[in-house]
Length: 234
Image (cartoon, rainbow, N blue to C red; front, side, top):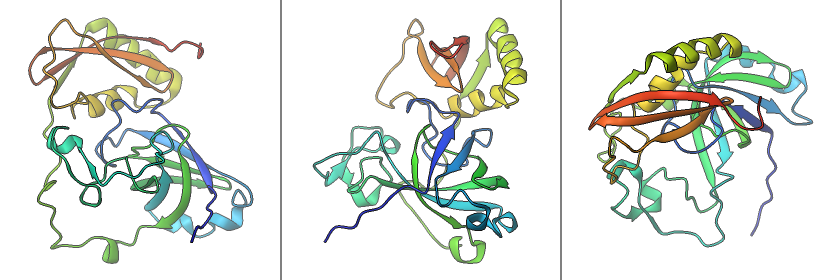
């Protein structure tokens, strides 16, 4: 039996590409976005009462990872990307129906728009449903997950002087905590765990409308090198 579902809204996110997105929500509190609700849910009635809630569950589609053939096993980044386990034991993006879930902070409620932070969602993500987070029911004190029992360890992030100066200027232009966003995301080390980066290799990702570049001057250490306006956004 098949059931058709339609998005209730689309996320406008600080993350314009998949690389460097935190692998779980709340790991980058400075990651912000807006959920734009679609008709008929863009009316005030649909979000009435939501101002009493600090966090919401978002059920969404991994719209850039949809596959025709389901996978029974996946290689999650948490295990280094080279160990396969059953798909239902992970939160990998390769889902049987492409469905993901995240708990995010609800910063502000407007008719047709929810302002969010602590997100791990790509720009353009279709949201299928929104549900209020219920602390007494959704937080299980004795829960365990032996594969992911703690947040990933953070690595050191520092800046070239010019890059930090530019980031502060763009943060004022965007009215967003850009420096914090970049530091929080890069501190989780976005590179695949099996790679051994050389100091001369440059990495890059897009945050808001900026292409940000960095390298690893030594293991466990990232230095932000520069940033520039992304093509087509100036």
